[in-house]
Length: 352
Image (cartoon, rainbow, N blue to C red; front, top):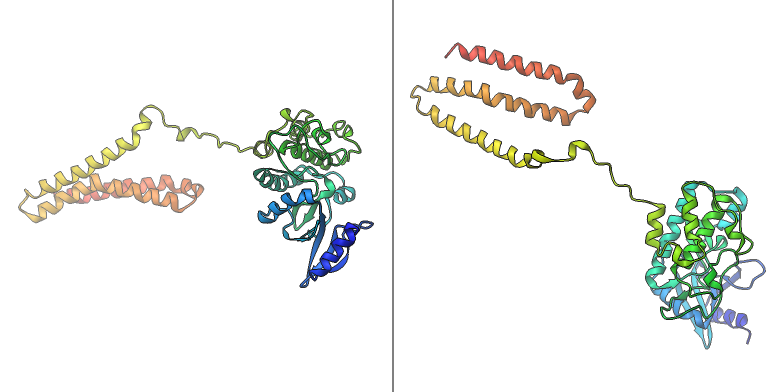
């Protein structure tokens, strides 16, 4: 029985309503409906089943979710979510080159998918404009029909797959594909978006790189012919596109010499201050007349306690209002403190 006919019978047996081909002129992928929900049905080659099952068990961010894998004899059909939106290929045709910021968004979304595939040891092998869909302001990587599991001790891929112009040289049998192969393809995609030029052959992809200062060295490294010259993993690629800038060290935060010990020194001063107050309180107890004792303590408070309270009051105002408002009134507040202290000293002096 023809594989397409067998796949359609398998879908019907499992109560899927056949709606029509997803791509005009091709029987599969096929749009199907089940319990009022529309899905995409794809024929899966027996060699692809292992990878498809792995992706079904561990869904990848910003990629279609594989819900079921139907099987009858040697016929396998995957059922996955429909990403209902235009492809980057059609978007590029309509609007022309993308801005640098939009390309960064594309790169960010695709790297999220690639990082998950990298953790699973899966190589997509067919990252291209038509396999990236735009949906709800995000970019989805689709079509894992060419995906494979990376084999450490293998010199090259057993099946040579990939799209001319987007596939890395190793896709054609020069070496085994790995995450660096997908990085190469992503580099071609990003370059297409920046320049508006779509390669027609693998040689053409190297002829016109973007001239944008930020992107040129990144794209050049991503699309190096030698995999050793590319970014070696998605983490390195992400760091190149989205570098983490270290905050500039503020001079007033740099503690050198004595400033390193200032917190401990300040704590010691507070202990001395508290000890001084204890000594003064004990000294006031030697005065038998309570009026004289009160006058003595009031005088000590004006000289040693009130300035400290004024200081904390000013700090509270500083944090309560903006720096600009504080700067306007700081001088007046300090003057008011001085006047209040002098008036209190003058008043208490009458009783001493």
